Image (tube, rainbow, N blue to C red; front, side, top):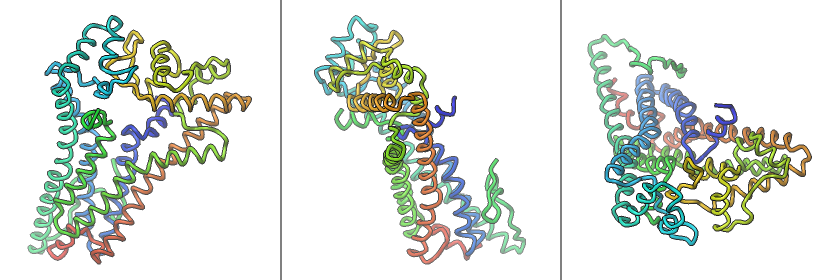
Length: 422
């Protein structure tokens, strides 16, 4: 994978890649160190326990958060297929516009695509209510199961584990044989704050992306963590942290991306709304140079859909497939089971058109595209750096300040009462 492709992936706020980079690579390790440092002045034993809890909590949650939802969704898809339905059929097709919909697609694509595809559409059409229930069940399972594990089961397991650790430390002190031994890997690498690591409601829910489901799951996780808190102070402390995490993970990054793109345009005159992969595409650059860039003539649904069907090899159709969820079959016929989001495609078309016009005016199209790629890549990395800093440093510091104000102590609220026991 090229560097541009990597930057493109971590810059796509509709996918989970930015979350993986921020969550596992930057945020969690930093939070562990900050948690230890925040507690060590009052009690190094509590600091080690708190850091251990933070490690287990954060990385176990990340594993479920990033992998659990796709896994449960795949298992649900297998179940739906066993029931004789294709889970990839988009419920938005029941919106039935003049140019796309379940009936329109069956009529327009019959004879053009394989019979099994048409049969799948007809079966869903004739059993809409049951199909909706299956997709609603898929959404419920793919969010509820991770929510219950992260918000209820995992905290209880960690709290029970901490209680056992506290009892062991207490017993050693009572026997006057206490000698602190580092906790099991990977926490035995922590020393004095330094760490080293080796269609309707159902239609809307059914079309939630993995990131959308992660946001829902995170909300449920927050509720579960507050409900399973060991005391009121811990519940308030967790609530403050989770509210900040939800905002910084899911709300702030898309807005920050828009702000950075607008700033880049004002400073450089280069429109960088497109993906850096587009700026790096020689075919796109050559099409602008040769004045051969094909785009829909207008923004109507009819024109957009006709263009996709008549020009599947065009750059616009290729980018629509890559960035806007348009699907093509192997024979370059648009998949009638997928929904075409006209608003996304209009935005793509206008951004391509705007960039092409500005590139032509620059008189050096290749240099203009290179400048755009550098600016966009810089924006993506800046977004990741800023949001990671806010999550890894600013939010924990704000949480610690709030904790001190609310509880009068720097210790983890759920462990504070254990200070006198060890």
